[in-house]
Length: 183
Image 1 (tube, rainbow, N blue to C red):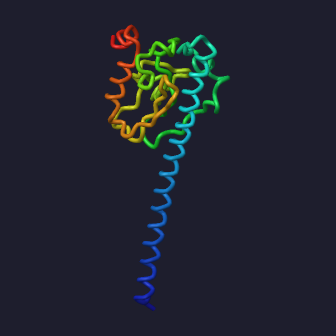
Image 2 (spheres, helix red, strand yellow; image 1 turned 135 degrees about the vertical axis):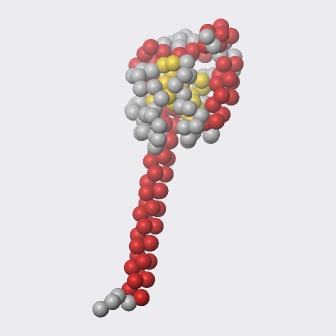
Image 3 (cartoon, rainbow, N blue to C red; image 1 turned 90 degrees about the horizontal axis):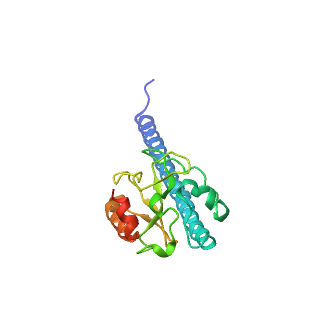
């Protein structure tokens, strides 16, 4: 006996509905993972940035040395630094200290609100610090998280602002440090 038209139509609708629900669930899962990653990164960036300011207050207004900044900031962190959830695409990331800010006095920055202390990095070295060379590329998608010398952190959309942010950071550093950073 041949299936009726009604039965064939019903099966087609069920298949389409199942496909749609599966696609929607996958899309929601991706969005959830993205938001989860952004929330963890934002919380850690906020914690590290504020910890650096607190550290400086207890150490003659000086920031921690880049060589062991994570260890130095450990007592000041609101939340422990844990590995970041991996991005949906690209390389793994972590929070890194701007080497140019190592051991500097907070009062020496020309413009603390533009001076980058910490940033999201593609470096995989433990206790990493560098001169912003491991910032995610401009086309990496998603926000770029930065912690500044005045204690605030920001997420920048889109990452195409990367070059402008780097320019502002160079201007924010004391003249002697900015000149060393350009070499």
